[in-house]
Amino acid sequence: MDRNNIEKIAHNPEDRMLLAKLWDKINAGIRKNIPAHTTFLSPRELEMAKYLFGEPEGLYAFGGYSDAERKMLIYLPDYLEESALWDEDSPCVCLRATFYQGDSPNHRDFLGALMGAGIGRETVGDICVGKEHCDFFVIQEIAPYILQNFTSAGRTKLHMELLPLAQADIPEPEVKEIKDTMASLRLDSVISSGFRIGRSLASQYVTSGKAAIDGLPCEKPDKTVSEGSKISVRGLGKIKLVQVNGRTKKDRISVVIHRYV
Image (cartoon, rainbow, N blue to C red; front, side, top):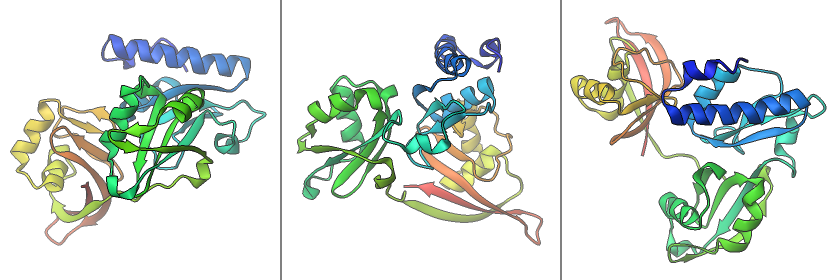
């Protein structure tokens, strides 16, 4: 861990400010051997934080469930076990908003209503919308305010309750499975296959700064993509390179890609 790395990692003043805040929060916990946590971070911000902190003992990226996209950095001192992340005193809290099934509010409705209520995006983690309820994750400090004041999302009336993290209902994402072969695992090739567009167009999306791998922007079309990586392309959506199966008889790489729908 080295604070001087902030200058090497940050791409702009906003990055520097964010990384400095993360450093102050987590380093204070480590020095004093007390619990410490940040607000929720995007995948890109998490990647920057990983480069800044490395993997010190007791530091976790936690978003309330195993596959969460937005996560907090939480430092647990040596007298606390990892299970403390899931306890009732966890800095990450799950709230359930129950609604009439016929209303069918979506992710955008809930996010817009939360932002409209003056709740900062950084205090809210993943929002998981089901058929009759929406489970979403927030930092513990704002949970009482939301429970009292978050009564509707658009025209949909909500009933709010606090839920143990282990009882959160996380719907399976809808995906389209694509099986294909490619000459190499270049970023533009994977995007071309996953979104069914030409490789030259895929390359244009990358060089124009619209693509990211696991949250980190990438403008290099020939960047090698690793198995398990998630790729988002602004204007197209998100895909995941789920499986790399080796080479075919024609010496092409067989892959399985999931496109989120």
